[in-house]
Image 1 (cartoon, one colour):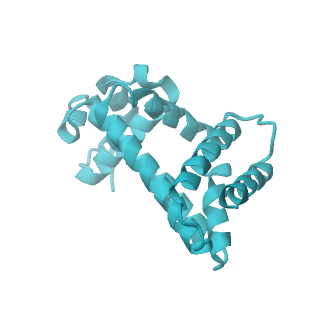
Image 2 (image 1 turned 30 degrees about the vertical axis):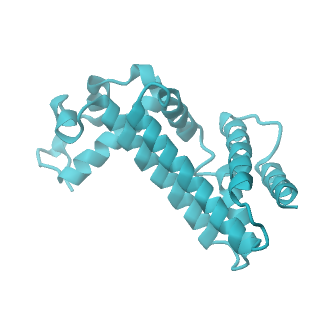
Length: 198
């Protein structure tokens, strides 16, 4: 597919994807307050009018970028589970610990994610995407707990607690210079899991 720089028209899906990626880069570099139609389009190398062709405005572009970013994280989680042993506990541990290594434990992703978080209280559309992403993550934990520990009747609260622990450890690892290693983070998650379930 040729770019606009080559004088050829890009497929609409490619242009839209380019705007999502540009929005993510702007959020990582400038934070939520530094993102505008002009900034996104300059980052994407397109005219300012193009963003409004695909999105109602900056808010929708950010919400869709959040959804796209969440889908990338979900794919990494699914790949971690697929690469684990067939044992249900190994699949659960793989899901819980995938956040402690790339591509999820990444300073660029952290910067973008923090910008999303900062907007959840002021933008209903972004808050709705946030709720979807975290609901799906918790449901993933719940399903894997049910597979590995069918004797556990309440999977919801352990999933909530594990989500909070993983977020905190992921945040520290992604910031850099964490006082623990990814391997230690994984061990903490496993210990917390066992404590919650027993």
